[in-house]
Image (tube, rainbow, N blue to C red; front, side, top):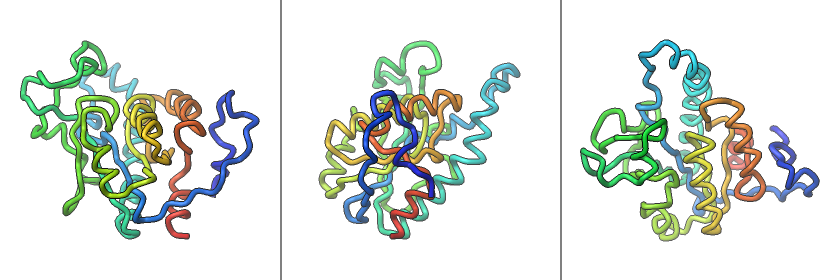
Length: 224
């Protein structure tokens, strides 16, 4: 297992003592999979954009999606609630979106809830009565009833996987921490547009808002 207790330290926590061991009791833990949707696996038609995003697609297909599938399977086996969040608007014209998704640029998103590109990728799709919350915000808590769902089910700890590390993952983690949930981010089940952005954001949120672990660490804790 990796030494997660000393990894991803920012300036603020360079000399901080090692955190305590993590406990993830099944009945008090949820796995939250954020925004791993078809739209983010679509190859750009523009060759230059395709080249720019190629490392991201490689990480998603070779690391994030397979690892998250493994994590989901482990959670289901251990009786841990699996919850999904995806970006999707209720209105076809997107009138209900937050301002951040209406502005021009990368964050402009028009993903009506029933469109194919707004769905969770097939490798990770929910089964049975697993909950999916729809959001037009970065944070999966803001503008959804996820906060209420977690409290109603007695959840104390949330394990987080998904994209993008520096955007929706970070926003969700901060919201969860502010609501006094214990949060674990699974490093090799997440991605940003670049590895640099991914690693920088993990250093920013680690120790204060969450603990950053590897998949093998989390599986080890769940199996102990």
